[in-house]
Length: 457
Image (cartoon, rainbow, N blue to C red; front, side):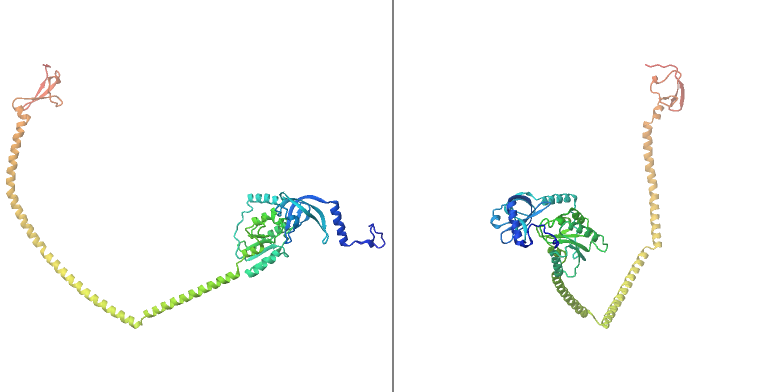
């Protein structure tokens, strides 16, 4: 606030000696250049820009502050370091001030690499840990095209304009809802996490028909750092609705890209992947319509040809009845001929059976059997005396032979057979004992004997 009118100015400079802005910036530049002079500064590169002039503009930063730097073309050609966002470098330069804008800056004279940037190293460590935990395992198919596309991005950024332009050109039927969230700064990640939670609680949204697109345009590593937030990556991984991430340009890769179900290199490419091209669909419909027309024509031609063929085969009912009547007459004539032939065959068979029956009459068979019996009786009466005579002669010869070898015949000549009480034949005197009773069998009769003395010679 300007000092009161009745107050005395505290500034030793009088009001009449007020400086212009240019004069103040000039004094500040001289003071910075004289008091600080040339220094070495270490920090992380960010926002590296190379316009056509050949100069290089970038920001040197640490976790608490940042410094704008300018590397002019005459010195840039002597710098061997690649100078990429996230690289940690040491620069030597003159502290100065850009008078037209009043920007405090460092005019760089030399650049040396100082190792990997802090942010990039933290990014790689977090990426490896989330990958080990399986946070990057999502690969669910996105509906194509989605019934309802929910876009999480800044409402004023170029990304939403690119997405809406692509959707309008490719698929005007797409239903798109913009969920405005900050996409840069400390509040960006919490806002996107909250929006994801809100959308996943909407029961009207179907994971098989609706999808979420998280997008923003390109920028430096720190500009995109909100999309490397660990909690945002986990929220994307646990999302009930499938998520596509389209953050930055093709060279930009964030943890949100890895955690999402699908990734697109740019916002426009993401919109192209989510919806079909209506021109291609129209062209395909035209080709299908042509194929359908040709198929219809071919079907009609085939049916017309078949109809002509059937019409040629179609006959008047009177002709059909006449043909059937003629066929019936032919069948009747064939039936009569078959009946006559069958009757003649049965008559011939009857006569044959009658002749066979006459030849095999019971009376005749009985008479023939009686004649055979009478002849057999005569032969039997003639054969019996001869057979008896032969059997008598054979029996007489057998008796004579038997008498010749019979033991009884031997006994008849005066021999005897001794037997003990058990009926065993006694062959040796040693087989007997004194007072043993024996029985002698003679040619005629038997004698009871008793052993008086046992002599063995």
